[in-house]
Image 1 (cartoon, rainbow, N blue to C red):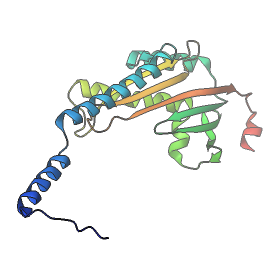
Image 2 (image 1 turned 180 degrees about the horizontal axis):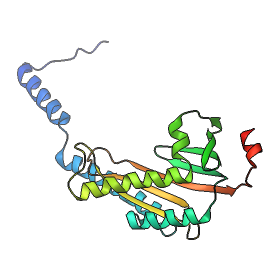
Image 3 (image 1 turned 30 degrees about the vertical axis):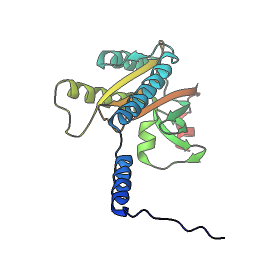
Image 4 (image 1 turned 180 degrees about the vertical axis):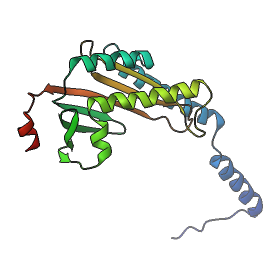
Length: 204
């Protein structure tokens, strides 16, 4: 036996009610939206807090802190070394860099050789200090109201080796964008000074 589906005579009214219900269901609740925005912001803030508090004496970085670290690095006179850096954005990448006479000779990204000049310039110790300097300049411009339109404020923190000025850890957080907050950090996981090559060995 087949049961027929009965449609009420007042079909127009039912259609109207259904349409209104659909419309109301489709409207995002302001309260719900505010809750989720607050939840996301709090989650990000908590993650940043945990990252910073677990990162052994993270410092707010300004020009004086950076110049002190540059001075220590210059005094250390380490021109030949291998360095391994874990860089985290949405995921984590591993850079392995061999430096001779303060020039990167080889850069591996997750074990694969790179040939981009930017990578060679960025992931030496001097290159990392230069990157921090660029971010400091941006922060200064922002504080003075001279930031480039469309850019956002930054929060930057770092840990420097007290004897060599090596930038062991660095965190860069983009602020002021409601829909997108970018966090990037690097951590030097291995640093090995190398014996100097003679001029002949270096040329070969």
